[in-house]
Image 1 (spheres, rainbow, N blue to C red):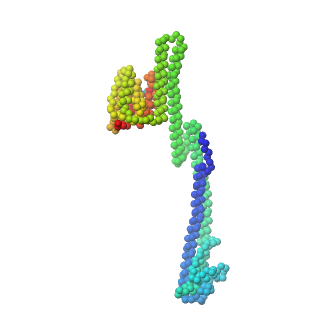
Image 2: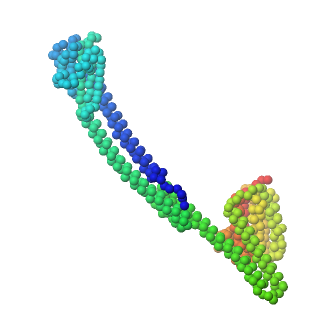
Length: 472
Ligand code: ADP
């Protein structure tokens, strides 16, 4: 059981939602401020340039046409010739700030910029633009000069409500779009989070179920996103777990059975001796010898089980360069009496220099089990042939051929499985436990080699093991 508790701020849901909302908020604020400020500045600049050009144009024409600014009619005439249009107010004064031209009577309105006119007459050029009450207000003050002398001032003022209205309109449209985007984002985020959380929850529940032992639990998730891939991985992992659990269960059942059989025999034999008072000495001797054989079988089986457990735990023993020829010769010497006893011909052809990286014990396990099987599952007057050689691609090949009983084709794919026996009676009779070939398989795998089993034409079997050569 996990001791961890899901906290609100640590949850992916909260983090995702907060991040998303923060990004959306920043984008909307930027769009609503930066974009509007940039457009307003652009209009400011164009308005300023407009009034500035108009004021300069008027001042230049007045200065060029009139030497002095004194008569209203002269100014009016110049202005009519100029025909300035699109400007809200134009005021022209003489050098004493007396208004000579003011078609809209602006000079008498409140706020006529007398101070600015006075400063203009002192030679100061001034421009100003502001946005107020939905309107762009731009003004320009320019002195009128003639022959290097200031003879008057021009004040141009323009009020643009149209562009102001466009800007305000744009502002409210943007605000409206922002509200829609924000609303849609909330809905979208809620939907995404809901869908992701639903999928995560189903993975979570699956993990819980499997943890509680339901190895058959499978997640069915549509789509092809990361969570769907994760679910597939989870399902394969569960399948693997189920297989491993099944193998473990079968292994325990088989192992118990294997151990129970000799124990039952021992029990029966001892009972027979104990309950049979007038039992003959020779019979007791026979029974005790049987008990000894059963005990030996028990020791062999437990020894093999321990070897398999060690192989399963993948404990890396110290590996060294091992010459397979030595292991084969030692095994042949050991099994020679058994072969002679069974009336078999045991032959070999062993090349020198067949060295591999392994442990002596592991090589012995492989060689011994294969040659012992070839002798055990043979026929009277049969033969066993062991060949050891190095192939051109620097592979060491150990071949164990026999002319024995062979393995039926349907059993061949299973013979490396644990506790698998083709002929149970024969195997048990020969002292087999069905573990020898699985030890060979696991050991060869552990050493990075390959083992194959073939039915020989004309009867018998061929077992072949391949390892990478190590040049000593
Ligand atoms: P066991 O300890 O019973 O010999 P193994 O794992 O060594 O178990 O072998 C599994 C089965 O494969 C044996 O029971 C036997 O039927 C079959 N087998 C193994 N080697 C040979 C062989 N050389 N010829 C015929 N059958 C064989």
